[in-house]
Amino acid sequence: MSREPRGRESNTKGGAAELPSVTAGPAPRRRSVPLLASVALPLFAPLPGPVAAQTSDWEQITEERLLHPEDGDWLNYRRTYDVQGFSPLEEINRDNVQELRPLWTYSFRDNNRWSPTPMVANGIMYVSEGSGRVTAMDAVSGDEIWVHERTFPDDIRISMAYPRSRGVAVFEDKVYWGTADAHLVVLDAQTGEMLWERQTEDFRLGAGHAHPPLIAGGRVFLGFTGSDHSARGKVDAYDAESGERLWRTYTVPSPGDPAYDTWSADQTGVPPLGGATWHTFSYDPELGLIYAGTGQPTPRNRVLRGEGDALYTASILALDFNTGEIRWHFQVLPGESWDYDQPHESMLIDMIVDGEPRKTLVHTSKIGWGLVLDRETGEYLYTFRTGYDNVVTGWTPEGRPIYNPEVVPQPEDQDSGRTFLACPHLHGTRDLHSPSYSPLTGLYYIGINNSCQILTYFHQDFTGVGRYQGMNSRPAMAPGYDYVGEFVAFDPVTGERAWVHRPESGAPMSASSLATAGGIVFGGTSDRWFFALDADTGERLWDIRLNGDVSGSPVTYTVDGKQYVAVGAGGRIAQTMTLGPLVDIDIPLGSGVMWVFALPGDE
Image (cartoon, rainbow, N blue to C red; front, side, top):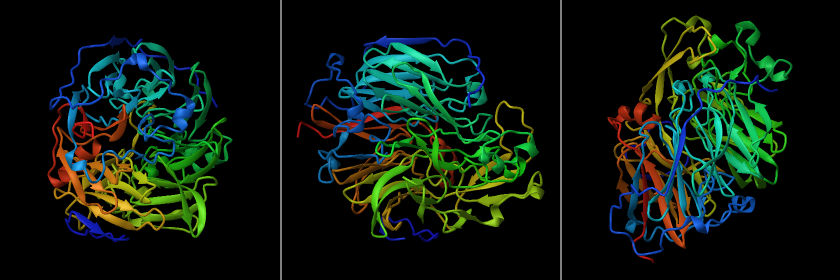
């Protein structure tokens, strides 16, 4: 892929060990309010069709149903354990998507750093908020069923998970919610009543939960925030029924672990920290592996931190489902120093590579590269360019990145005032907005942001509380570009671009991608456009301007056979606030809104 911009055309074809016990904060107060009057506001007269689902019709969300979801289910963060973000629904398709219209909206309290993924189970939609609420709504009418509210401790802002909450998980007749104050909370799916909770960590270290748990085989797998603070990265597994913690795996080593020698902890006096697992996981039930990405080392500044690769930060880990043992690891960015953390979900795709069938893992992240690994062994297969990047200039045959020496800070650069232009910006070529893959087209769809950051590095004392970074950053345009965002279809086998869609405004891409069997792929931008493209060609088939940046992950589901599309907007997410102004886009604080769309009538 060329690093040069290709203009502003709408579409182009082209190639190219345990912790000590922790002290809980003040006991949270909660409320669960069943069957409140609806605050959903229909934009049009109700469409003819099925009546709203009733909670008395609850059908258990079994392990089998999670493993093999029905076509109209959306029960996982990216729908399926392979996180492909693909729906086999086709009622809404390339021939009729232009008739798609808003059915109902629901306004939420959150309006900052809110990037929701609604979960839909038995006709009920569940949405969480970082400010401490989970709301259940009728997925057809938008009528509110219940609200569960949690009051956080007064010092909750220490948690890096606050005010972020990107979703919940559902299993049997329960809703599982990881909170900013580092608790696993379990609610009755039909009433919102809290059944039990478990403290998972001390949020005052920065640790908390912003992403929904992964539930598989009767277990709940949780990641943690905290890489910018003093938290030590980890992955936990809990029994879904009792809440007993089954295992914990740390993502940075303790003395005695061979990986400890990749840190300079003895020299700096600071133990290995970082490696947060703040995004979602994927799971291969046949291999019995959970795949988790890890964040950057703490502090970000490699000069302050000391030399060494700093395992297992900025890495992809394959964890044994039963024990949590690290079966293999692949470090994407050894000795990372630009806040290019790698906790992003790794998509599992079976592909033909060099004429042989391979069980692959495709990983895209903040850097402008996609990596393809053998997901059984962790073997490096190849990389492909996704967006503008001047930090990684290439890869060795073993899969180690080759760094541009001009952007690697040296001891004399610390506290010198020297600035570095490193690309992309720390909010990434992609960040929270997830890709999707269609097994029908064989294409990998993702919103890409091209940008840079101006960096300085400085000394900072370690206090054990609060932010510990040693680095400042501000955004900048990528050299030679007059736009930031583009939506790209990649062939994941060749790494070539099949087509590109670029908004005329140059706005950052802010929504996750959703591919469907109807031959369409959905996406969204910071300047409020929610759009549908032809999955084969990239032609823009339909769009609508929403109340704010399209900040969530679109999902699609059915109730009584009718297909709906839902997406959150107005979350004012990171890319909007940092990269949007680069192209004169500024979205003020407003209200997060869930939008639901459908075709008119019963056809």
